[in-house]
Image (cartoon, rainbow, N blue to C red):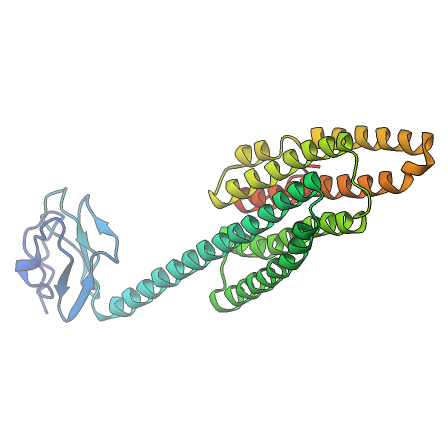
Length: 311
């Protein structure tokens, strides 16, 4: 290889180096790969140089190649880069797997959320109609929510151990595991309401307080639904905050309801048992709103890397 590169070689010199066949000195746009010596590299895996394209050859310095500026030519450094290309390819595949796992886990969170919201809506229907058979079904179906929570947690642990995610992916996987617990607990609130209905089976709850509870419950469930949708859609902080904007309103509704029920309990001793059931029920639905806020805080953590206090 003596005499290469020529002493008068300059950037833009049209002479191709001996290590590369001259027929590869010009590569059409869209070419999937080129050969340089014995090394075959995939241009889809390496950066291409569209301005002042260069070959970097071991031991021979930098050689300018005359190519149009719009043509991209891959970096080619011989057999050493074949290993690097393989490593880059493995890294790309690894990242793709992590993204797929993250997407799968977030879908699983959405599926669990769908079950929980369905249970909550059934509990409202049960409360309005004092339906004892529906109350029994809600309690039985809670076992499915519990099982799905355990499955999701196991999948999160496997993902952490096998794929070692980092950055936003790590935050997302950890959050999915936390949300599994949050959602399972929210599902318990629906079952708790059903148990109260069964316990109060001998006398129906008064319609006035029930109507107030249903209004509060609708706001709380709406918060949870919007927050889970924002999380699934990778929403930004402002969108997630907007999903739980009714938190203060739900708190005010609960406080006003408690005051009315306590007044009724003070004035009528026979209302104490019924009033106690009503207070338990309204508190369960208010806790749905509180936990929806927890979900929002974790969703913001995934999106932005910090955890705000939304209470």
